[in-house]
Amino acid sequence: MNWNVDSLSCRNATRPEKRASVRMWRTKATALFAHAVFFVAAGSAQSQGVPPVLTKVQARELMAHALRTDQPQAAAQIAHAFLREDGKDPSAHYALAMVHASSGDIDAARKSSRLAFRYSQSDVQSYMSASLSARLAYQDKSLTWAQYWLRRAHSDAPNDVQRRIVERDFKRVRNQNPFRFWIDTSVAPSSNVNNGSVSRYMIIDGVPVIGVNVGDAMALSGIEAMFNARFSYRFHETETSETRAIGRYFTRQVALSDEAKQTAPGARGSDYAYSLLEGGVRHAFRTSKEAPVWSVGAIVGRAWYAGDPSYDLARLEGGFGKQLSGNNSLSILAKREWRRDTDAPNGTDAFSGLSFGFSQKLARGDTLSTQLSLYHTEDSNPVFTSRGGSANLRYSFAKPLGNIQISTSLNVGYSDYPDYRVGFIPVPGGRQDLSIAGEVDLSFLNMQYAGFAPTMTLRALQTDSNVSRFDTRQLSVNIGIRSSF
Image 1 (tube, rainbow, N blue to C red):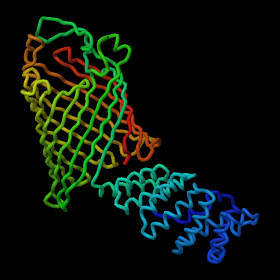
Image 2: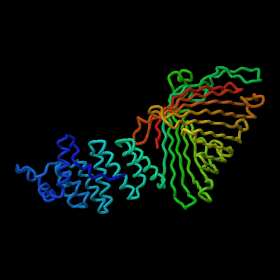
Image 3: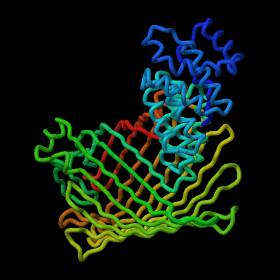
Image 4: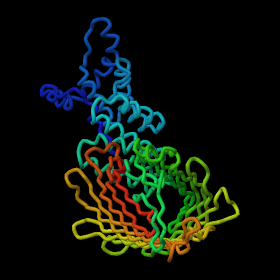
C-alpha cells in the first residue's frame, strides 16, 4: 500500500523520446514551478490560439514533483487544471487524493481515490489507486472497505511480489477487523440429488420378503446449487480472550434432470431443497500465550425442508485447539444439539458429537490432516435413533501443479440404527450403513480475480446397507469459488 507519486507522469509516455523528456524535466523541476501559473491558464490560452508553456508530459512530472517536495497547493492547482480539461483524468484524481490525505481530509481523499480507480486506464493505475483506497480506508478505520480495496489491488498487481505484499497486508487487516465473513457457493451436477437407492428391489437382510423401490425412492439425477455464508463480529476482546456474535445461512437448491422426472413423475426439485439459518455467541480464551485456546458457544436456529419449516434447534459446543511444534495442530470439539420438529413440538431429538482433529506439516510443505468423529442421536421416534462415527484423511499439496492447487480426501463413515424397521417389519440386528467417499479438489490459481479462484471438486460416494433402500451411489462435479488467501 505504498504511494508512488512518480506514477503521475503521463500514462502515454512510453516512447524513448518521451522518457528522455521526463528525465530532463526531473532535473529542471524546480525551474518549472515558475511557469506553473501558465499551465493553470492553459485552458484560456488555448481558446485564444496561444500554445501552453508546458506539455502534458511536463505538467504531470511537475505535479509529481510538487507532491514529492511537499507543495500540495501547486499539485492541486495542476490537478484541477487537468480536470477542467478532462474530468475523468485518473492521474489528476490520484494527485488530489494524496493532497487531501496530506491535509487530513480523509473523506475527500477517499472520494478522489475512488474516482482515480473508476477512470483508470491501465492495470498499473488500477493497482495504485486501489492500494491508495485501501490505505485511506485503513486510516479511516473502515477495515472491511480496506479488505475490499486490497482484493481489487490484488487483481491488478503487476507481479507476484506485489501480490504477496497485498496478501500479507490483507491478512493483517483481517486479523484486526472485528467483522469477518466467509462465502462459499457452488453448482454440482450429481447422479443422486435425493440420496435414493441404486437398487430396484427392497431387500432386508434376514427377512424373506422382497419389496420394490419406485419413484423418488430411486436415485434421481440433477443439479445441486449450494450457498453457504458465515459471519462473526468481535464485540469484546482482551489480551487473552474474545467474544463474538456468530451467524450462518446455508441453502441447497435442486433441479431435477429430464431422466429423473421420468423416473419420479410426481417429484419436483424443490422437494429436496434445504435451508438453515442460525446465530449465537462464541467465547474463546487462553490462560497464556503457550496454552491451548478454549472455546464455548451457544447457537439457536431454524431449518426448512422443501420450503416449509422443518425443525428448530439449540446447540451448546465447547472445545480447544493447540499449535504444536513443527507447525502441527490439535483440536477437539464436543457439542450437544436439541431439535424440535415444527410439526411435532412436543417431541425433542438430541444429538451428541465429539470430534478430534490433527494437522501435520510435512517436510516439503504438504499438509496431512486427519479427523475422527463420533456421534449419538436420540430421536423421539426410536426408529431413527442412531450412533456411529467417521474418519477423514486429507492431503493438501503445497506446490501447485502448474497453476492448479490440489488436495485429496478420503472419508469412511459407519451408522447403526438398532431399532430400525421398515413399516411393521423390524430389521434383524438393526440397520447398519457403511459409506466411503473420495474427493479430488482443484483450485485454478491462474483464473483468480480479487483473490477468489474457481474450484472444481470431483466426488464419489458409495453407501452399502443391510436395507437395500439405502444402498446408494453418487458421482458429482462441484464447481465453486473460494478465496485463495
